Every structure is written in structure tokens, then in C-alpha cells.
Amino acid sequence: MGKALDGVRILDMTHVQSGPTCTQLLAWFGADVIKVERPGVGDISRSQLRDIPDVDSLYFTMLNHNKRSIALNTKGERGKEIFTELIRKCDVLAENFAPGALDRMGFTWERIQEINPRMIYASVKGFGPGPYVDCKVYENVAQCTGGAASTTGFDDGPPLVTSAQIGDSGTGLNLALGIVTALFQRERTGRGQRVTCAMQDGVLNLCRVKVRDQQRLKHGPLKEFPQYPNGKFGDAVPRAGNSSGGGQPGWVVKCAPGGPDDYAYVIIQPQGWEPLMKVIGREDLVDHPDWRTPADRLPKLDQCFAMVEEWTKTKTKFEVMEILNPLNVPCGPILSIKDLVEEPSLRQTGTVVEVDHPTRGSYLTVGNPIKLSDSPSEVKRSPLLGEHTDEILKQVIEYSDEEIAAAHEQGAV
Ligand code: CAO
Image (cartoon, helix red, strand yellow):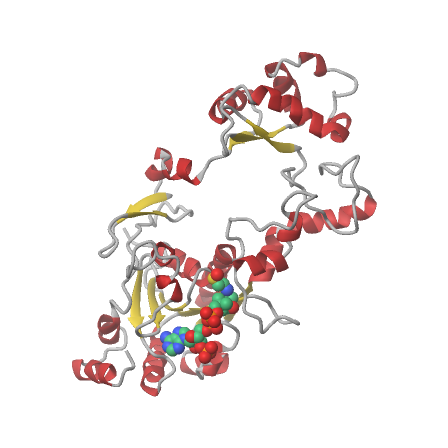
């Protein structure tokens, strides 16, 4: 079966996490992704957080499936010539270096357009134009500068980062959407374009509900927050603990047998009040004048969830799920990463996949979270550094054996 992006060729100058997540997605959809790496060094993540000496790390392998690797020094003259030929032959150039790195090599957007006017040039940077435009950014810096950290955690604690990689992988998703959208527009115009995604913008976009709350704050306290009614609100959206970001109250409650991940998240919709009170043995509160409506309950959400917790503490998180779901009470067990990688249904859908690798053996990874019925994703192992150098020189830029040998001799590849 063909793939959605068959025939699209991507010149992949991405490294670490944000850019590679984007190009990996496009590779799963069938694009030919050519990863350009510094000879002898490669993407720095190959050697970071290694679990096995001298073997590509899981950090690298899990972000670079289905790609080919060419080891090419794009700072030397011969390397620049080869890179220029690759720009001519590719549809997309993706990169996430520190600001200005490609310009310093001589590949400005103007130069790239001269070489290939159909080229889509896509970049991730930490910040858009503004005071921080030249700064380097990693995941947690993006979370801190994009509004996530100041609104995550408990009111009496410091700002918290989340382990979901919303700055890196989140911005990689944005970049992938920007690229396929630009490819779609190129069908009509014949022209490439510049696609830029700032990590700060990506995180702020995911914190949209907090920008909503910032404006609500002008009109009084945020009544679904744990600070209401007894705590104080300042002039910025505070940390909301585990309260729900939506219109229906929710909280994390303890479950049996009381281990570190024995918790469930329970949401109380207006129609869920009656079945929930009945199941926890508080039928007396169903029509009680102090508890009956959502507005009655807002000032005492802590008491609501304390009552629910008295009941959930007698059940495992999975029993809570089994009992509450048929009653139409939205809830979810807190699943550990161990629970998730062992879950058979995630293996069946290809969301968790076992992959074989020539130097590390088999390992688990997360497959494509986007499922297309006509373009199934097969997860293939990441390339070794420079594994496809000669193949790419021959097949993509049609170098002769002599030219390939010369490129090696000159240290370009
Ligand atoms: N041949 C020769 N040189 C190469 C090369 C190649 N094939 N590939 C990369 N390089 C060079 C670059 O030209 C650059 O050199 P200069 O600094 O002389 O211009 C250098 O390698 C890479 O530079 P960098 O500054 O991007 O790398 P870093 O490790 O210092 O910084 C990071 C990493 C992520 C902070 C920075 O790249 C960045 O801010 N990127 C944008 C935001 C981003 O994507 N962050 C997410 C990172 S994932 O957690």
C-alpha cells in the first residue's frame, strides 16, 4: 500500500528533540527523510543519556525512526556543494539549530530560494521576533517562558514543569502541520515558503485556557480553583493543583492499595452527581438544598472530592474505572509508564511498538499517534551515523563512484 507522503523528500537538519519529532512523523507518513549529520559526531542525542556504552541512545533511536543518515560537513566547501545539490533535489528543508546557524553556513532563506524556489524551509526556534529572538531554548525553558510552569503545580509550591514534552514534541507537531500545509499550498502556487514555529508560541497555544482564566480573573475569583473560597487570588492566574481546566470540576483521588500511582481522576458533571452520590453511599446529598446544584457545590469542591475519596480508597483505580464508567461518570486511572508499555491494546494499535536495532537489540518505542486508514505507519529502526551516505550521494544527487571517493578523500562526508 502506498503512503500519504510518498514522493516527498525532506532534507532533515534537525537535532535533539523538537525537530526530529516532526520529521519522524513525516517519515511515518512515507516521506523520504534524509538526516544530515556532522561527520564523526552526528546528532548530539546519539550520545546523550546512554544506557549501553558506545551504542546509539534510546533518546536518539526513539526520535529518528524511518530516516536515512548522511554524514556531511556542511561548513566545508565541498560539503556546501553537496548540500546545495541536496537542496535542489528535496521538497522540504527542516532545521532547529540555534538562531542563525544555517545563515552562518551561507544558506539564508534568500539563497535557498535561489537554489530551489519550490523549497519549503521549516524551522523551530525558541522564540519568535522580539527581545529573546537570539536565545537558545530547551524544553523546560519553553515551558517556563510559555505560561505552562507558572500555572502548573500547587499554590503553596514553586512553578512546576510537566514531563509531557509540550515545548519540544508539541512544537514538532506544529512544524509538521506547517510543512504539510505549505506542501498543499505549493500544489496551487508552485512556490515554496518559510515555515517558522516558536516553542514559546507552541506552549502558550497549549495554555490557551489559562489566557481565558487571566481575563476571567478581572471579574472575580476563579471558583473552580482550590483557592476558592478561602484562599487569595493575585493579579495573575495561579497554580491550580489538579483542578480541571474545563467547565466541570475534577480532582485526583487516592485509591487502594495506596501505592505511588494508586490514584484516579474523577469529574463531576451535573448529571453525574446523582449516580456518584448513590454509589459512594451519600444518597442523602442528591437533592440536599446545600449540595444539589453545581453552583451549590463550587465553594465546597474540596469536601465533595474528600467524600468521593473515602469511597475510592476502598477500591483499586481499575475498580473505580469499572464501577464509574457504566454510570457515565467520567474518570480515569493514573497509569504509570510501566502500566502503559505493558498494555496489550496499545501494542495492538501500534502505539507502543517493539523495534529491533543492529547494535542495541530490541527496544520499545512509541509509534505514530496519528492513524490513517490508507497510510499505515510501519516503525523502522533509526539509521546508524552516516549509514546511507554513499547511497544518498549516488541515488539522490547522482554522483559517480569517482565523485563519491573524492568527497570522502576531501573529508566532506
Ligand atoms: N556540519 C557542520 N556543522 C554542523 C552540522 C554539519 N552537518 N550540523 C550542525 N552543525 C553546526 C551548526 O552549524 C552549529 O554551528 P555554529 O554554532 O558554529 O553556527 C552547531 O553545529 C550546532 O549549533 P547549535 O547552537 O544549534 O547547538 P547547541 O547544542 O549549542 O544548542 C539548542 C542546542 C537545542 C539549544 C539549539 O540548537 C536551539 O536553541 N535550537 C532551537 C530551539 C530548539 O529546537 N530547541 C529544542 C531542542 S530539543 O530539546
